[in-house]
Length: 458
Ligand SMILES: Nc1ncnc2c1ncn2[C@@H]1O[C@H](COP(=O)(O)OP(=O)(O)OP(=O)(O)O)[C@@H](O)[C@H]1O
Ligand SMILES: [Mg+2]
Image (cartoon, rainbow, N blue to C red; front, side):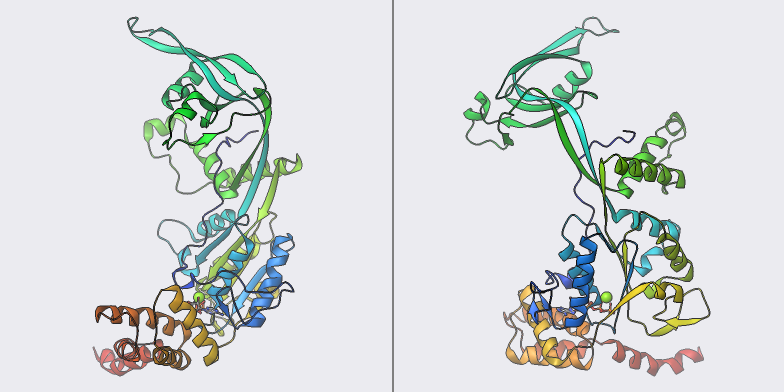
């Protein structure tokens, strides 16, 4: 195999900006995939949740790759919450990456570069590798030394003689200085269970053998304990690595840039991965898949506030979706008809028509007061805030008058206000006070309008 895949990494970085959505544990569907009014932290919005449930099933069956899903609905109606729920339903094996439309405008990277990197983080590659290893508990160990070539009075490790024991046999091996050095550096000694890769000589300590004298002596011991390996000392083992295309890109790029020139001129640490590197990775992955060594798990790229993308970004996404190794893309927007950034034309949802043609659209609706109340109740439990009945009622009215999002934010601030006042319960007064101190968006617009005339005169 061409790529230096040696590390077992955990699946990709997950959804991070979840502060306001920690109460969402899933889509809250029953066995028949119908929405239960209140379940998994989700309230109401049944149609959107059931639609999302179908999407999740298709993603799990690998039938959705390269498709586009749009979440469309007014502000604060749970589009981001729905995307979080989808990621929870997909589980840990499916990469789920979330970015905001505004994140593509960075000073350091090209827009398309940010997008391509995000897309490649969403493609999980599960690599299976059969490797020959020596494995066993060390029962005897002897470092073989030789005089240092420049200083004959100093001795350096030249090799190692190891006796490894399994439940079935005991074998003595000899290895060179590379293996010896790894063992010395890791502080491994008798009683440890180790694995040595037969081809590369890489040593992996697995822990202290439970059956060894050391493993039995110390009662309080923080070292990991493992059973003595079964079978033969030399054996074929299957290793599974979970990586993403982006991880492989980084590995290959690092290997390429570690040339002698980077040593002299420094900083060959590239900010951007070159197209050649990506092509090499794609070729390698295809080869692995053809050989039955790798399985591809297309994940999900969620772009929140996607109306912030511009025409260039949209056409890039459109083209990318025609490729082979692409994730499912979910875009969320709260715009109706609006101008696409970087273009003069107006378009529905602020998206180009050819993209809309390929998409399935899930709509979210405004909430009634009852649902708003139920969501606020869940949020208060999530934030460990106790509300009086009147306070909850007041917040629910505010949510209905302004937006759910504003009411959810006010809830945290009202709790802070109560805490400052030395109370352990949030009352209606707390809610009223913070509602007066802060503004929702339409209040802020009114507020600024008052000043507009004056500002224009300057
Ligand atoms: N159906 C729901 N069940 C439970 N909580 C919800 C639901 N819908 C929204 N919420 C919560 O209400 C708050 C506002 O919703 P969210 O941020 O998801 O709205 P949005 O549609 O993404 O808004 P915007 O268009 O402003 O981005 C969040 O805290 C979210 O977790
Ligand atoms: Mg949102």
